[in-house]
Amino acid sequence: MLETTTTSRTGTRIDIRNVSKHYAGATAVEDVDLTIEPGEFLTLLGPSGSGKTTTLNLIAGFTDLSSGHIEIDGERVDNIPSHRRGLGVVFQHYALFPHMNVEDNIAFPLRQRKTPKAEQKRQVAEVLETVGLGGYGQRFPSELSGGQQQRVAFARAMVFEPRALLMDEPLGALDKNLREKLQLEIKRIHQEVGRTFVFVTHDQEEALVLSDRIAIFNNGRVEQVGPSDELYEQPRTLFVATFMGESTVLRGDPQWQGKEWTLGFHGASVRGVAEPFAGPAALVLRPEDIQLAHREEEIPAGRQYCPVTVKQNIYLGSGRKFELELADGTVGIVRGSLAQGAGLEVGDPAFAFWHPERGSLLPDTGTQSAT
Ligand code: ADP
Ligand code: MG
Image 1 (cartoon, rainbow, N blue to C red):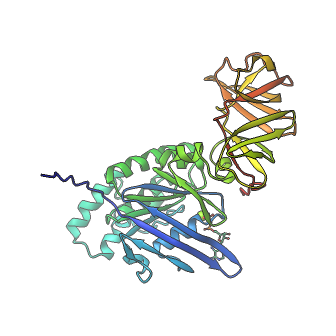
Image 2 (image 1 turned 180 degrees about the horizontal axis):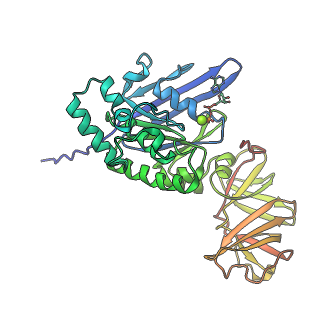
Image 3 (image 1 turned 90 degrees about the vertical axis):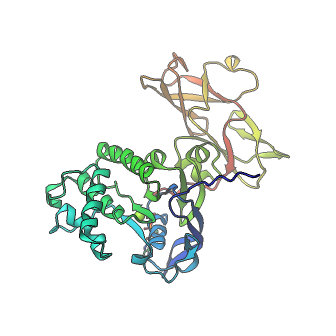
């Protein structure tokens, strides 16, 4: 006899299918195709103007699509108005009702849904505990700090148990310490309630802290979507590689022999293996991929390397960070242990080397537009 296991997946699935949004003379979102899994924490990450807010507003139903469609739990929502999509929304500016106390602010969506009074009280008290504001119910928004007001906004967005919670840069107006504290709380709340969260930010560290997966937006398109380690270690475009973390980028015209490439680089010839493509290339190396040697003879066999000049040798306590200049003026970044490059001083010539399996060779799409 076969045994069946039932996996209970809480939360809602959102399918964004080939969605575009054009304004007169401007494209905000172009052919975005993205599935948000039930219970997932997905972050839309990208520079300002890359289409994140528009995508969130299309899901919420605040904006009409130009083409494509969106499904929530398998149902097309084209003709469903935003207030009937069952989604909670939090914006950067909390927009609380100033003349209502915290309890009444939070109960607002319940009153709209004609929830019985006693039930309202119970749900409001519960959600106040969840956001860490137990005992604040009688305060007015003007008597709360920015962070506390944003907690009330979270509570109001969650109190009616929405199918999914959408958040557009909700921590953008808060200072760094508070932002980091609330990031951890949002993560805890997500784990606690187990619902689908869609979060917008332009801050890659924030995206790393919070997300199960990240969708990288650039010029209205999704360039890559995946868990953060995949985006960092296997970027598919130069934009993704340079937007996610620090890197050294060596540019040139590669020679291909099957999947093996060689890149002539001022005073060096470096090689590796990749899926071939036509045109100029950029080799992206992470700071932890690169090591330093004083002299060429010290470089272990089988490594790729190029000559550099030390521009900065920065002591970080737990290790060192070097800024290097390559022959063509490219800036390189190396991060390693305190022993790494010991004795190298600013202005010294040195060699940067790396294992040929490290680094990603990607089509060079030119200067990256991060505004
Ligand atoms: P993000 O949230 O990533 O900063 P947005 O989604 O707000 O980006 O905007 C994407 C692009 O669409 C921008 O170039 C913006 O100027 C444009 N855009 C957004 N809303 C409108 C609108 N109502 N009318 C015209 N252009 C718009
Ligand atoms: Mg925005």
